[in-house]
View 1 (cartoon, one colour):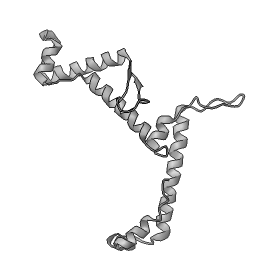
View 2 (cartoon, rainbow, N blue to C red):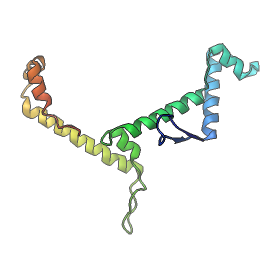
View 3 (tube, rainbow, N blue to C red):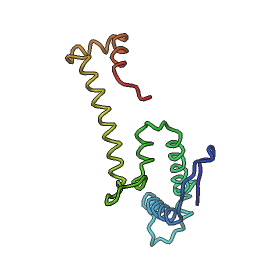
View 4 (cartoon, rainbow, N blue to C red):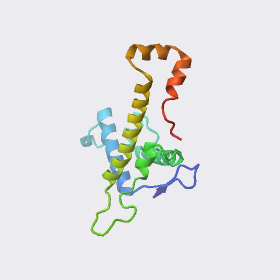
Length: 157
């Protein structure tokens, strides 16, 4: 079953029936324990949901959340970490003869190393501008100096 957010035609996720049944089972287990109803009591699931005041199934709520997250990551800037990790595909590209393709974790590792390098560059830029903690506190109190300090960080564009 494909689910979309409804606002964007390209947003769709694949939802399988086995996932839905597992979520429903976990939901009912949780609801029964909160209401104090055991399986031996032979109480219907609909009655338990009514006692707890639920209108939607957990599977529907999870489905909506998954489709929302998919749409959100599709709309974000491609330089964002979440989008790069989401788009990482270990099977992409060609590998040389006798070379194995990168695994998913290796590809994510490359993305995270790039982010770590950017963080180190930001720290070095800050260290170049600041010599000690007391000077940093004084700069943070002054707005114009704070703007000057923020300009030391490289932009994400």
